[in-house]
Length: 384
Ligand code: MG
Image (cartoon, rainbow, N blue to C red; front, side):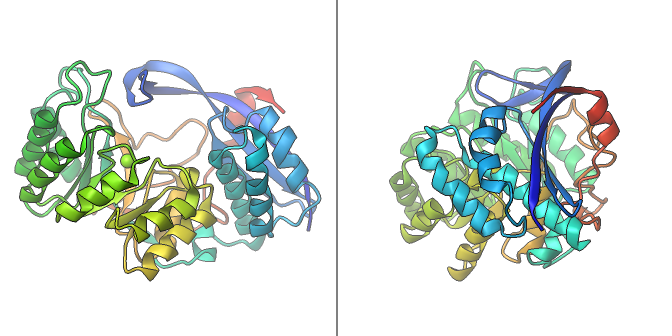
């Protein structure tokens, strides 16, 4: 079995998710957004697919790094191929990102699953076939009746509980919202949500990512009174020492690192330095499914949970493959958007949730994405 070809295709699809100047999602008018899909072809006719923003897998990345490493190689030798790509990162002047590694590796896993007629989550562990989801809200905004006040968050939380969610994570207000960041507002929103949902719903917060140690400590002490399940990325994660300082003083579990680079290597340092109580890894952020599993297994060896960052089929597969992860992150959610609407380029949702808040794994071979190839072909804007 050999890899014959790697294809990139960019297509358009309608979305009502708008992105602000800091990169946070909010509801907006319907626009056409772009998505890329890479396809890895084997000489047996087997194929693997993965989606990413077009910038992550632009033509230069495929031409200069991905094709030279993959073409002619055995597609099931993922560790060898991943190591080879990782090796080329240093000389790539920052062009070959961890996210690009992750897309390629996801497509290789998808190919393996399709070739072996088995879902990827079973190939990588198969611990369970459904995972409890927490509702992950969008960041706060200034939209009347949206997520603009603590009362808005409370009203939305009641709707989420009625939908079946047993856990809710609130992203609070961040710039460019005029009054953000604001620790007092964050605390008020957390208190309003706890009051609205009662004691039996797990609550988490992911607030402004650049609070000072003192502000973070103050918010954390209030969250302890509200019995929050974890406290996430409240300070710049480049400063591991600040997290170690905070974790030593708070009882509420500190979760991280999420956006920090360094794959599984940096996560090992956070454990060794006592900088978190729950480890964090998302498939795109750490360079793929396999490095995310390395992080989870590392956490397990230290008696820690590893919560998986972000939604999508690959993150869901990792959640289902391991024991030491309590939740799947479903979102981002907003009162004015319907998450259960299927994206135009899929035939069905990758993370369907039942009324008890469980997301069920697809039993299709591969990553289980129900791709609408006809739609993608009809809306292609570039191929390379
Ligand atoms: Mg986060």
